[in-house]
Length: 230
Image 1 (cartoon, rainbow, N blue to C red):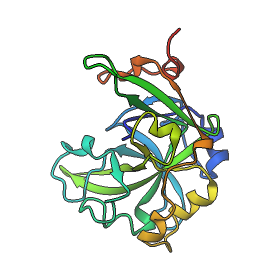
Image 2 (image 1 turned 180 degrees about the horizontal axis):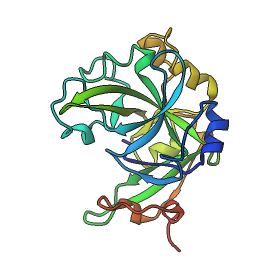
Image 3 (image 1 turned 90 degrees about the vertical axis):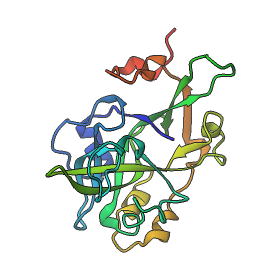
């Protein structure tokens, strides 16, 4: 499960990292990205990677409204090739996406019932931008076209840093070769899924984050969220 993440980098750093022109600052300098918000991603609908803003929470092509999209922010790699909502997306490079980030939050369950959950902030390679493996699709809802995205998650047991906090983790494509391959139209579903798995623990770090990130309505933004107060 990954329900909040960050994309704190600016346009210049993201352009340099992903080699895809990003037209404006929308979606950058974000410290608390939440489900159903517009997020920055890279897609390749016609074979040429391009940056787009997509709604986080997949809206399937057959959806009549947006009511279930907040439940479809994550897709499990174990079932993404067979689930009705995703199975037609994963085989197609034109429907695979890179959801841009430079960190994510996960919550540790409290030892005693009634205590608040402690958020932890995860970074890759000491904080460089990376990409979540994701799938996306356009859908016409209420006469309006909406492009939406869901990121993939995997079993975290092979990563001691992630599994100490949660049993699942997002599929992180940290290297340019894997990112390019994920968008490659010549790769089928099984070849694409072979790119997915837990990132090496040597490349992942976690530290306690500010509990203010727990707030759902009117979620706060700012670098103070990334570290526990005091």
